[in-house]
Structure formats: structure tokens, C-alpha cells
Length: 136
Image 1 (spheres, rainbow, N blue to C red):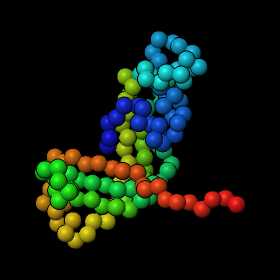
Image 2 (image 1 turned 30 degrees about the horizontal axis):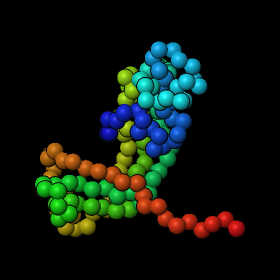
Image 3 (image 1 turned 30 degrees about the vertical axis):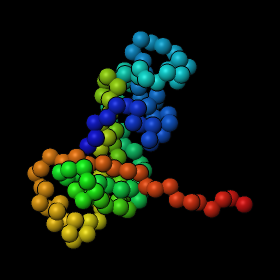
Image 4 (image 1 turned 45 degrees about the vertical axis):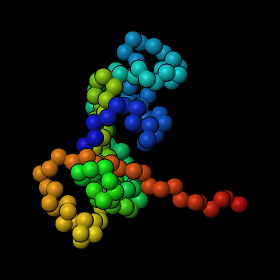
């Protein structure tokens, strides 16, 4: 699970944040769309958790171990993300849950096994932009 400011919802859809969050002082929708930095109140408090039907392939997952050198990172590419759920939290936050599937190499799997029950810093990068053929 990833606890984040609600602005992170823009990674999924540009209107997702304004669909579930609003300004707490009762401003109009037009004013909210101009300045989304203060969207902290739940628009519909009865909707707490939403399932997001999207799969992402080709992401890069990195486990940062020890120092900041490249040798201290475990990097897995072509990872898949699926089964997203958003839990909206009053105050302008969201918990993003998802399933991450990666295929570590044998040596990577050994390093990961050694890190079980260890607090780690990790990062997740979206799939690389690929050149797509232009429509003719």
C-alpha cells in the first residue's frame, strides 16, 4: 500500500481527484478546477474505497539497499501492476493498493530473500515511453 497525497490520483486519470475530493469551504466546481491544491474534503464521504480496473505492464521496480550506489540496488524491469484500489481519506490523502508482479533473476531472488522482514526503500517507475507508429 502507498499512502499519498490525493494529487497522485492524476497519474491514473486527470479528473479522478476532483471526482472524489473538494474544497472544504464550499467553493464552486469551476473554482475547484482552477486550484486543486486545496482539495481536502471528501466529496461523497459514503464512498470510501474504489476499485480501479486497469493493468500496467512494463514498469520498473527498484529496491534500494544500503548506500546510494547502483551496485546497492535491485532493479527489476517489465513488472506488472494490477488490482488497484483507492481508499479516500479526509484531509486530501489516498491509500493506493495494488498487486505488483516482477520476475527477479536467481541472484536477485537470493538478495531479496535475505531482505525479508527488513525495512526497505523502494521505487516504482512507469513503463518507458515506446515509439508508437503514427496513424496514417
